[in-house]
Length: 201
Image 1 (cartoon, helix red, strand yellow):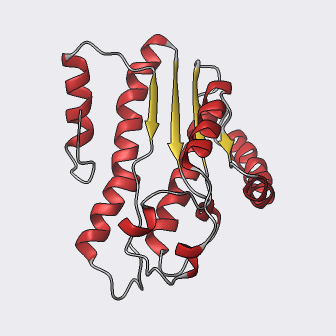
Image 2: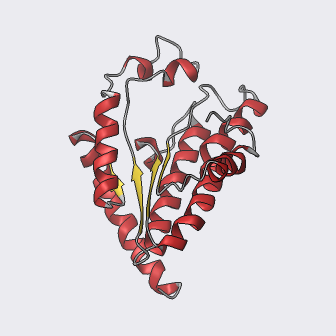
Protein backbone atom coordinates (compact mmCIF):
# COMPACT_ATOMS: atom_id res chain seq x y z
CA UNK A 1 0.00 0.00 0.00
CA UNK A 2 1.42 3.36 -1.02
CA UNK A 3 0.09 6.65 0.35
CA UNK A 4 1.28 10.24 0.07
CA UNK A 5 1.33 11.42 3.68
CA UNK A 6 1.49 15.04 2.60
CA UNK A 7 -2.22 14.62 1.83
CA UNK A 8 -4.53 15.06 4.87
CA UNK A 9 -6.76 12.14 3.87
CA UNK A 10 -3.91 9.61 3.58
CA UNK A 11 -3.86 8.25 7.18
CA UNK A 12 -7.59 7.45 7.18
CA UNK A 13 -7.34 5.90 3.71
CA UNK A 14 -4.47 3.69 4.86
CA UNK A 15 -6.41 2.43 7.88
CA UNK A 16 -9.49 1.81 5.72
CA UNK A 17 -7.48 -0.32 3.29
CA UNK A 18 -6.01 -2.38 6.13
CA UNK A 19 -9.48 -2.96 7.56
CA UNK A 20 -10.75 -3.96 4.13
CA UNK A 21 -8.01 -6.61 3.99
CA UNK A 22 -8.82 -7.67 7.58
CA UNK A 23 -5.32 -6.72 8.75
CA UNK A 24 -4.99 -5.80 12.42
CA UNK A 25 -1.65 -4.04 12.90
CA UNK A 26 -0.18 -4.30 16.39
CA UNK A 27 2.97 -2.38 15.46
CA UNK A 28 3.11 1.11 13.94
CA UNK A 29 6.34 2.73 12.74
CA UNK A 30 6.06 6.43 11.93
CA UNK A 31 9.25 6.89 9.92
CA UNK A 32 8.15 9.24 7.13
CA UNK A 33 9.71 12.69 7.32
CA UNK A 34 11.93 15.13 5.47
CA UNK A 35 13.58 18.54 5.64
CA UNK A 36 13.63 21.65 3.45
CA UNK A 37 16.97 23.44 3.67
CA UNK A 38 17.21 27.23 3.63
CA UNK A 39 16.45 30.47 5.41
CA UNK A 40 12.81 30.54 6.49
CA UNK A 41 12.33 33.93 4.82
CA UNK A 42 13.35 32.44 1.47
CA UNK A 43 11.80 28.95 1.41
CA UNK A 44 8.47 28.00 -0.16
CA UNK A 45 5.52 28.11 2.26
CA UNK A 46 3.43 25.51 0.41
CA UNK A 47 6.30 23.03 0.45
CA UNK A 48 6.86 23.69 4.16
CA UNK A 49 3.20 23.12 5.00
CA UNK A 50 3.35 19.79 3.16
CA UNK A 51 6.46 18.90 5.15
CA UNK A 52 4.69 19.71 8.42
CA UNK A 53 1.74 17.60 7.27
CA UNK A 54 4.09 14.63 6.89
CA UNK A 55 6.32 15.25 9.91
CA UNK A 56 3.63 16.21 12.42
CA UNK A 57 0.00 15.96 11.32
CA UNK A 58 0.05 12.60 9.53
CA UNK A 59 2.19 11.13 12.31
CA UNK A 60 -0.36 12.36 14.86
CA UNK A 61 -3.30 11.02 12.86
CA UNK A 62 -1.73 7.61 12.31
CA UNK A 63 -0.83 7.35 15.98
CA UNK A 64 -4.40 8.23 17.03
CA UNK A 65 -6.06 5.88 14.55
CA UNK A 66 -3.88 2.87 15.29
CA UNK A 67 -3.80 3.55 19.03
CA UNK A 68 -7.60 3.39 19.23
CA UNK A 69 -7.51 -0.10 17.74
CA UNK A 70 -4.61 -1.19 19.95
CA UNK A 71 -6.43 -0.11 23.10
CA UNK A 72 -9.24 -2.53 22.30
CA UNK A 73 -6.81 -5.45 22.56
CA UNK A 74 -4.62 -3.91 25.28
CA UNK A 75 -1.58 -4.63 23.15
CA UNK A 76 0.58 -2.80 20.65
CA UNK A 77 3.81 -0.93 20.00
CA UNK A 78 4.42 2.40 18.29
CA UNK A 79 7.79 3.69 17.10
CA UNK A 80 8.01 7.39 16.28
CA UNK A 81 11.16 8.54 14.52
CA UNK A 82 12.41 11.91 15.71
CA UNK A 83 16.00 13.19 15.52
CA UNK A 84 18.83 14.52 17.65
CA UNK A 85 17.88 17.97 16.35
CA UNK A 86 14.77 17.65 18.52
CA UNK A 87 16.94 18.97 21.36
CA UNK A 88 18.24 22.10 19.61
CA UNK A 89 17.10 24.92 17.31
CA UNK A 90 18.72 24.54 13.89
CA UNK A 91 19.11 27.55 11.56
CA UNK A 92 18.23 26.74 7.93
CA UNK A 93 16.28 23.72 9.21
CA UNK A 94 14.14 25.62 11.69
CA UNK A 95 10.80 23.99 10.88
CA UNK A 96 12.27 20.51 10.57
CA UNK A 97 13.97 20.72 13.96
CA UNK A 98 10.79 22.11 15.51
CA UNK A 99 8.75 19.29 13.98
CA UNK A 100 11.12 16.71 15.48
CA UNK A 101 10.85 18.43 18.87
CA UNK A 102 7.11 17.90 18.57
CA UNK A 103 7.59 14.20 17.83
CA UNK A 104 9.85 13.73 20.86
CA UNK A 105 7.61 15.67 23.27
CA UNK A 106 4.45 14.01 21.98
CA UNK A 107 5.97 10.53 22.22
CA UNK A 108 7.29 10.99 25.75
CA UNK A 109 4.00 12.38 27.02
CA UNK A 110 1.99 9.64 25.33
CA UNK A 111 4.27 6.96 26.75
CA UNK A 112 3.45 8.23 30.24
CA UNK A 113 -0.29 8.31 29.51
CA UNK A 114 -0.25 4.71 28.29
CA UNK A 115 1.54 3.11 31.23
CA UNK A 116 -0.27 -0.03 32.32
CA UNK A 117 -2.28 -0.35 29.10
CA UNK A 118 -0.05 -2.93 27.41
CA UNK A 119 0.88 -0.40 24.73
CA UNK A 120 4.32 1.19 24.50
CA UNK A 121 5.59 4.25 22.67
CA UNK A 122 9.24 4.41 21.60
CA UNK A 123 10.92 7.51 20.21
CA UNK A 124 13.99 6.97 18.04
CA UNK A 125 16.35 9.95 17.84
CA UNK A 126 19.12 9.22 15.33
CA UNK A 127 21.87 11.61 14.35
CA UNK A 128 23.14 11.84 10.78
CA UNK A 129 22.13 8.73 8.83
CA UNK A 130 23.21 7.48 5.39
CA UNK A 131 20.00 8.03 3.41
CA UNK A 132 18.76 10.37 0.67
CA UNK A 133 17.72 12.86 3.37
CA UNK A 134 20.14 15.58 2.28
CA UNK A 135 19.36 15.22 -1.41
CA UNK A 136 15.62 15.34 -0.67
CA UNK A 137 16.08 18.43 1.51
CA UNK A 138 18.12 20.25 -1.16
CA UNK A 139 21.16 20.65 1.08
CA UNK A 140 24.11 22.14 -0.82
CA UNK A 141 26.73 19.40 -1.38
CA UNK A 142 29.36 21.69 0.17
CA UNK A 143 27.38 22.23 3.39
CA UNK A 144 28.87 20.86 6.61
CA UNK A 145 25.71 18.89 7.31
CA UNK A 146 25.89 17.07 3.98
CA UNK A 147 29.58 16.27 4.54
CA UNK A 148 29.21 14.90 8.08
CA UNK A 149 30.05 11.28 8.79
CA UNK A 150 26.84 9.30 8.63
CA UNK A 151 25.60 6.27 10.54
CA UNK A 152 24.57 3.12 8.67
CA UNK A 153 20.79 3.13 8.18
CA UNK A 154 20.46 -0.60 8.92
CA UNK A 155 22.22 -0.20 12.28
CA UNK A 156 19.97 2.72 13.21
CA UNK A 157 16.88 0.72 12.25
CA UNK A 158 18.07 -2.25 14.32
CA UNK A 159 18.64 0.01 17.32
CA UNK A 160 15.12 1.36 17.01
CA UNK A 161 13.66 -2.13 16.56
CA UNK A 162 15.44 -3.47 19.63
CA UNK A 163 14.23 -0.54 21.74
CA UNK A 164 10.70 -1.06 20.41
CA UNK A 165 10.74 -4.74 21.41
CA UNK A 166 11.90 -3.85 24.93
CA UNK A 167 9.28 -1.12 25.29
CA UNK A 168 11.83 1.64 25.84
CA UNK A 169 10.55 5.20 25.61
CA UNK A 170 13.70 6.68 24.08
CA UNK A 171 16.70 5.53 22.08
CA UNK A 172 19.57 7.50 20.51
CA UNK A 173 21.80 5.21 18.40
CA UNK A 174 25.54 5.70 18.81
CA UNK A 175 27.59 6.60 21.87
CA UNK A 176 27.96 10.29 20.99
CA UNK A 177 24.23 10.70 20.44
CA UNK A 178 23.42 8.83 23.64
CA UNK A 179 25.71 11.12 25.64
CA UNK A 180 24.41 14.25 23.90
CA UNK A 181 20.83 13.29 24.65
CA UNK A 182 21.34 12.25 28.27
CA UNK A 183 21.34 15.63 30.02
CA UNK A 184 18.23 17.10 28.35
CA UNK A 185 16.53 13.72 28.69
CA UNK A 186 17.18 13.71 32.42
CA UNK A 187 15.66 17.15 32.93
CA UNK A 188 12.74 16.27 30.65
CA UNK A 189 12.08 13.07 32.62
CA UNK A 190 11.96 14.99 35.89
CA UNK A 191 9.67 17.61 34.39
CA UNK A 192 7.42 14.95 32.87
CA UNK A 193 7.12 13.21 36.24
CA UNK A 194 6.22 16.46 37.99
CA UNK A 195 3.61 17.43 35.42
CA UNK A 196 2.06 13.96 35.48
CA UNK A 197 1.47 14.49 39.21
CA UNK A 198 0.04 17.95 38.64
CA UNK A 199 -2.29 16.61 35.93
CA UNK A 200 -3.62 13.93 38.24
CA UNK A 201 -1.55 10.87 37.42
